[in-house]
Length: 115
Image (cartoon, rainbow, N blue to C red; front, side, top):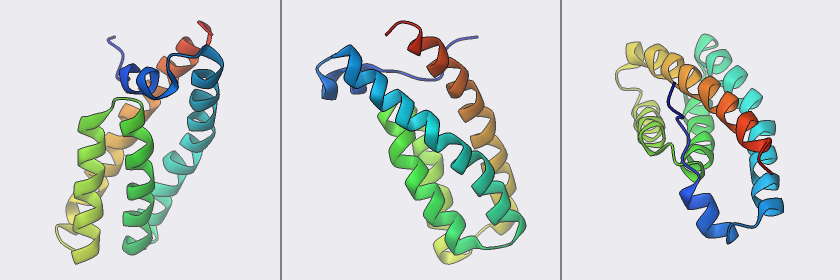
């Protein structure tokens, strides 16, 4: 399966320094459980405002790792939650996020072996 991450942006901001890249990757890997557990939990509890806030936080992180399409989808989710629009689509958004972020997690663990 093709990687869902693209480290070009990260390489640019870190100057390609292996240790700094490794730190960024580890920080993101530490955040992933918060997103993977938090988004479905907030959705199930119908805490839509908090769901949008967590989607916003996740957006910045995923875009750092080149997942721009996922970042845009998270932004759309955030905007929908602010207006409580299309509530029935939130579940699909969250499930899609989990699918992509799970693959990203595998990709990043693979990348770590290179540093």
